Length: 264
Figure 1 (tube, helix red, strand yellow):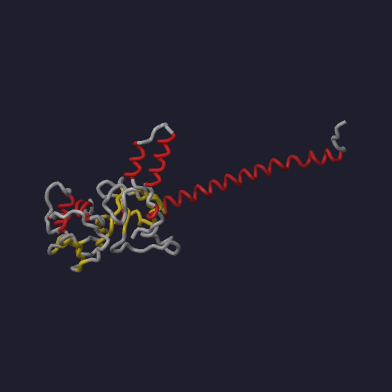
Figure 2 (cartoon, rainbow, N blue to C red):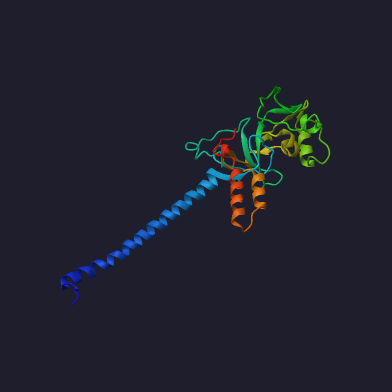
């Protein structure tokens, strides 16, 4: 004969059982609150603090390479009287690398180096940058083409001509010229790619407005040689042996020495 307990025991059990449901409800609510809090923090970080970007072109070589993946600090150059006590805001300076919305098409993002800030007089002579009459230390810059381009290498003395620049930039530049130098207006920045011979930058489309600046590269968190990856992709098939070869080639394309590097 099975035991079901005394009337007192049965009464005790029946009285305790309803308490389990509220406990489960509380645990469920706590889990939902934790999830919601995590989502809010993640959205805040992505919106206001950091954002991921990929380098698609060679214009910043050798500082940044095609296949580098960046975390961009969006708070570093921010302006807010409410958050200035908490976040390390500072003004943009010469030599800073910035990520910004391309002024001609704000849906695109570019990354370049600031070479002149508001009020500066800037020019290029034989590929080298002069700001306020002084040649700048640009050891980070690379020059891959031996032949000279008058417009690109002696800007703006090389003149504004052809289909290289827009009519808007042509007119703006003429108004800001002073004795062969270009004056950077208030709230704007003159930027160049470190790969000076192969960079589509301020020489061609003008200044970067302050409001277009997204932030500065904080960290290279991932880097992959696309040439190696493309070769691996072409050899993939359903065969296990080819898959093994493909995985090996993808791994060989990883640039481990660049990961977790701070761009400078």
